[in-house]
Length: 504
Ligand SMILES: *Cc1c(COP(=O)(O)O)cnc(C)c1O
Picture 1 (cartoon, helix red, strand yellow):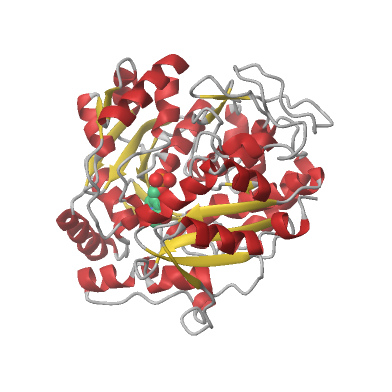
Picture 2 (cartoon, protein in one colour; picture 1 turned 90 degrees about the vertical axis):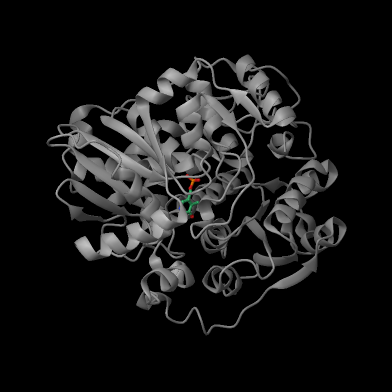
């Protein structure tokens, strides 16, 4: 995947990025010089502006892009967010990261449009479930999971950047469930982007599959692969490593290491914090996380000036992050399947960004740690451990704890949480109460997205929101292909407009 960013610029023209080293000159398309620059955690990829970072996903040295410095929001700006529309808060949070690559007026229009797709006037409403405990509902978007918050805006930003450059792109991704639907829903009808999502045939839920297979636009394609999620991921990785194919189709990625997705997730930390009295009130956020993406957005919010006491990592039985916090050793183990499948991961890819920060932005140390991970499946986090323990807490919930938390929460407060959210409610209980402070649990999915697990735990199947009631009866459109790279590449090549119409 290290070569993924090579498609930046015109893939087949002379502006191909060829420089190594962090200060290589890069993109000659800009009619301006971006004023915010991004560096790779591994220190050997070109420094880029926001637009290039958004299109690239991963850095070409295999690292992840980070801004050189953190923008700050003044306390009175944060206090003034209380009661403002969500899309306006999003602009205040995201604009400082764009470095002039996207104008404020364009960003405002995109944010307004993106968050108009949500089924709640607050976009991300807060629900109080205890004296000092709130649930921040992030699931009112089109696919009922928090990934819509970032993906809806990301799709608009990508289209915008590509339109300005007169280019197209082909997005290829693998999904175990939520990301694929969010991407297809966000990019459906895009003039500039074609999307192909690989998923393991028969191994995603009916709701998840239908969210990918019922959109009728010609630019989105759900591809059921006869294999596992790991097979799908390996196929995507192979396509990105197949340089001629990657360049011919201008492949791009929208997985959780895309920096623009992280930035778009910072928005709700500020919206919720201001609504509950920040910066004058102490807050802790409890976040169901696997890839460390959502909770990294909380860390960014704190760097920007939101006073956050603790960021609590909530994991399911796949507990690599809580183990790392306890021991200082990051060590992979096999994945176990749980009722919170979106957190069933072995490697937390975004953790690299925090390691880079907490270790003093030492790219050489990151390279050594990642080499150790590739070789032996483990590394010591070293200097970063003390800071990790000071800034974060962590707890994992096994399947019994998840079920008990769902039943107890409903009994005590009437609130029905799904399994990812329940991991976080469980973790919130491990935090010592601070007088006057607020604990905010992020609810990352709607219970109706996981009806079988909910039925097993509560005895009832939660109903889909009315705006989605036709989902289960609409006609599905998908292609089933064998686990065969050449066949899948042929399928994509025949449908990508970059391949069939050219990258203009
Ligand atoms: C993706 C997802 C998560 C985990 O998000 P991270 O990017 O790993 O922090 C949690 N819950 C749900 C429902 C998800 O779809």
